Image 1: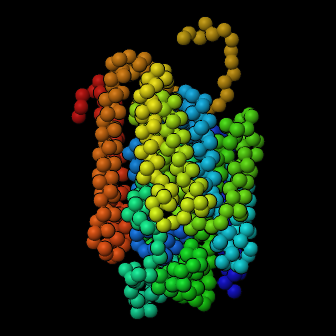
Image 2: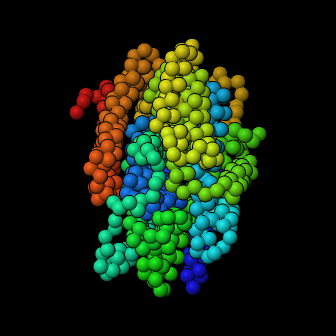
Image 3: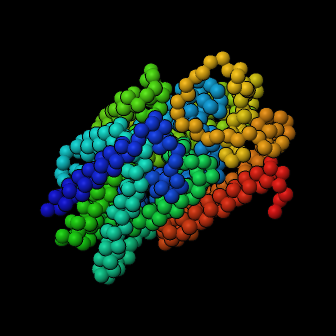
Length: 487
Length: 120
């Protein structure tokens, strides 16, 4: 019985996404509408859209799963995902908006006046986007498998196709409405079942959740180092995530970009109060997930376990719909960003038709990846995308906005040494060439602690060594970034 | 920049993003023309904005940098739970709100300086 409800909920979310996207299609008329919604999205609407886009499979399923398996230390993930916006706010939000660029490569070229840097940044945007897309698709596959017993690949393919259709048809304007809708859907889909679960837990005699016992599963042999690696990656990586950055360009001006960010912090903070509840209850009611099994499924399984009956089925269906909203919204934002870069920097001429072709390209590679690569816990693989972003885009944005002596060779050195080494570490970890016990694995699995300083140092030192290459327009760019638009 | 000297008409498509008014104040034209004085104005704004940003970031870094050590020392799951699960979010939003007020005040002060109005 529960299958019917869950399938209906997933179908409803998919149809609603396509319909809301179609509503945007009618008002998406100009190229500017298509890419950045003509920069007219007001703070509140934009904040809900950013939050809707940001709360991915990792937030919806992954955090609860990790808390269930490894204990409350894993709550650094949601704190880091949120605090990343504070760092973004204080260093890049307003200047990035005022730079007037469409994408990160646009920013790099506008600031450093170098095609080479632009191309390199494009490569990193596409790489980080793909890294982040794979777990979204795999999460969808897992969800559909658990809910309906469908083969694992079906969910991946379903989400990939819906996203390609929605993005290719409506572009950014329609995505704004889709994301706003999905933020509230995701919040409701976790909040309502959580209330019922907590009530059921209370009538169950409020059994205590034990995290101190030795049940916790070995995660890293250097847990403190891993925690710091996670903190650095999430705090500094948020500002460079391609789907986050592109949304700031849709604000009307720098001041609104700042206010948007504050609202985002409040909205995602509110959402992150919920996954830990599922993690703790999962520990009580789905303890078999601690050892083996897909812990990411905890959120989906709880209503049936704790409440059962028709109520459990309905709440489970609500969660399933929310989970699909999470996959769809993050995946469409990422696809939008990656496709934008492919259109401008890879395909020959610009235009909306090429954008549609690029959308297909942007989704094909991660889809292939999600079907071939074995599963890593969702939150962990998302953490890897953050590490790459923190080591490449964070130095580029922060130094590009605040430091006049940055040069194109410096930027290239920083991107290659910082971002490149983080990317290699992630690739080695995923390939399984270096196995857990010992420092080599810890250093490669949580590279941000060393790769972020490497990126910054390389950028600063090489820039200082090439003072003749400071772009002539640096002062003009600085004025544009920092002066209020009204002047 | 007179219209008569333009050799031929060109069709420009697209919506103009913002009509930039002619500089009304001397300081503003200094900035627009990128003179040494104008550069100094921009630098002063950047310095005050960077100071606000670094203040917020330093507080965040110090608190977050020491928290894992505190958790490690106290070994209390309940504490980790309370801090990371609930207590962390309001201060983050408050810090963001403080920064935005500070940054907007810096911009207002700068606008007054440029327009030659006395500080209120």
